[in-house]
Image (tube, rainbow, N blue to C red):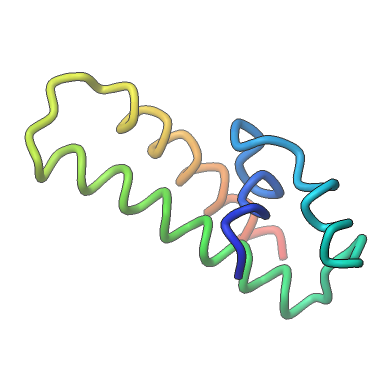
Length: 79
């Protein structure tokens, strides 16, 4: 699943509308949407784990990942 669609779940990555139009699609199927959300969830987890694991002192990426992780987990709970 293309990283250009990350903005569907994490708006800070930008609106994916033009990216999707380049592929000739305007919506995702239910299974595609679930898969996209799982990729976003994996990205958020990597952001949280990697910043701690690598000992980064700047918490910007960790905070961003943590906030998005919470949002994505909440979204899964609604489905």
